[in-house]
Image (cartoon, rainbow, N blue to C red; front, side, top):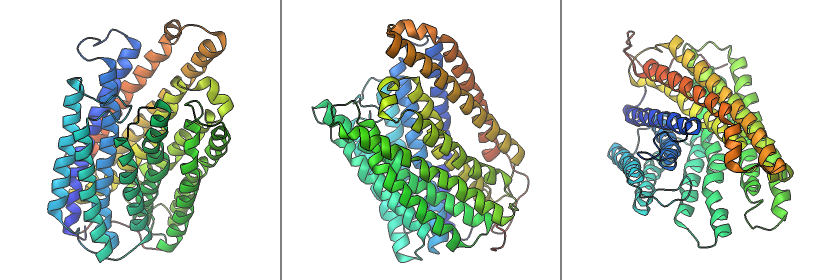
Length: 448
């Protein structure tokens, strides 16, 4: 490491990985309820488990982004973080708010809006923590060297904070509520988060491939333009059946096709940069995660999203397990793998060691990715059957659930396998190390 304040990333990564395990465990419990409907029905109802599962996902991903920003911004800006004390205060507030949200859910206190169930005072704490972060990194970037990577990262982070403010607006009209609800849920993951994803991948490619920065940054401009152009109006594919005007069916269908393009561009970008570099970076596990991320994002967010984004298809498939299939692979590919790639690259340096436990780390990659792919296919087949039986044949909802029982057991099996892979990753990155180094182990090949 070149700058002492890069160590601020370490506690953020630890907190993120611990919450990652909470999210996965809650997911396995939720999958168990699908297979065994009375499982924990009185002590821990399904809707509480699901809140913990989805909220832990969002919080640990954000913690990963914050940590990544504190790691990469000093190198990009060529100066230390503006205020380490503010970074620690932000971490304390954010983690406290996350734990308080879990306790409130277990006590039955929540607002009930999907993904935005946090009580009002917890939302306020999250915004305060976000503002502390934005102040800290913005001051660092403004006083240091300006790069495309930090500019795009700040644009994504500021956009995420601004979009979250719509979580405070809860109108009485349900159609209006859903319109603004999607401003947070969709524009986060299919808009501003894509900017964060692109900037973090750009940093990893610069460090691990040695390809000239200008080449990588030109690709970055193209990807960001595609993401913003398609993602904002792509929100329309959520407006089909909530009481909005009919023209959203055309807008949503057309721009949903375009939403595939930034993810496809990321695949081409990453593989082309690695091919140009000769793929000789010693941290092979970080390289594997960095290449796997855009591929799985393209299939999960791009292809599986497109499958049911046309209004003519969505009319039948809306709200079925097809949505769950898309959601699981999209989040895993685009954002979970992104954080795990960054952790794999940065943790050896933060722990003052050479890349360690790489074989186990790469095995965890294949176990988690295979489990997620199996889960996605299982949920897709379940969704197709559910759509036919419910929307075409007209069978009752609970009767259909019995027909999907085999798929739910298969999904649970995939969830357990994913948990095993997550534990392997946790040990590979945070377990004991043997090779200590005394100098900065950026370990990047020379630029070509």
